[in-house]
Length: 382
Image (tube, rainbow, N blue to C red; front, side, top):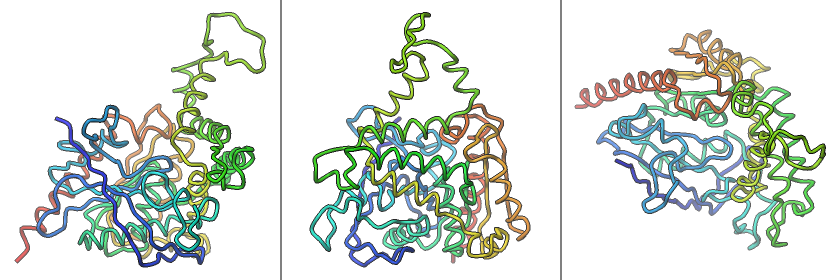
C-alpha cells in the first residue's frame, strides 16, 4: 500500500545568520514528515538531501503518477528506515528550487527577485536552518540524522554543530571534504552555466530566459561522475544509436551513451534552477570541518557525541571508500562508536540511491538497533 506524502512549509521571520556574514530573513522552508512522533519526541530521524533532491524523501503524492520520493526504497512502512517506528523529516534547504526560499524568490529588502544576489549558503548554514525547523516541531534530540553524498556531509556537520542533539549519524557515500578533482568538476559545470548567453549574470528571470544549454552540460558532466565505468560499459558500451553504420559526423548523436546523456541533460534543464546549481556546488566545495583545526579531522571530530554508521561503495570514484575511511579513522581515534560497511557494488556514486540488498540490510540492521534503544528509552521514562 502506498504511503502518501503531504508537502508542508514553515515561515521564519527571524534572520538566519550565514557564515558569509550575510543573513536570510523572511524565508520559507519546505518539508515533509512521515510516520508519527512518539510521546517522548525521541523517534525523529532527519534526512538531508543531496544536490538535486528535495524534501520529498519518501511516499507518493495523491493523484500524481511518478511522484515517488527520491529515497522511497529506503524509507517507509516496513522499509530499512521504518516509518511505523520512526518519525522521518525531510527538509528542502534554503537556496534550493523545490519550495524553500531560493534565488527565484523575492528579496524582502529590495522587492525584486534575488537571482544572483541570493546569499551563498554553506552546509553549516543549512544545518542551522534545519535545527530551527526541528525547534518549531518540538524535537530537541534526533534519534538519527542521515544522508548520502552532500546529505552525508550535512549529517556529519550535525554531529559537530549540535552534538547533544544527535544520537546516531548515518553518513552514506560521502567525504570529509571535496578533493581537487571534485572541485574541478564542479567548476567546469558552473562555467558551463555562467557562460550560457541566457544566464544574464544570474538575473535571467528578468529576461524571461533560462540558461538551458549550460544546465544541460552541467548535468551531463555530473551524471558521468555519478556512474561507474562498469555500469556505462554494461549499459551502453560502444553501441550506436541507429544501426551499425558510422555517420562520420562531429555533431550528430551517434552513440547510445551520447543519447542518454543528452536526455538526462534535457530533463534536468526543465526543472532545476541555474543559480541553485551554482549555490549548492559551492556549498559542496566549501565543506571542510578540519580546516579550522589545521587540517586535523581527528581534532575536528573530537567534540562529537553520536554513534555512527558509515557506508561506501567500491566503484564510487567521486566519493571513494578511502574518503569514508578517513572519517572512520578519525572517529576511532576519538574512541567513538563506529560501524562501517564497504559495499562491493558496480553502480558508482548512484549506488546510495539503488536497491542493493546488502546495503539496505546494513541500514535496516542499524535502524533496528536505534529502534530498540528508542523503545528502551521510552520504557525508562518516569
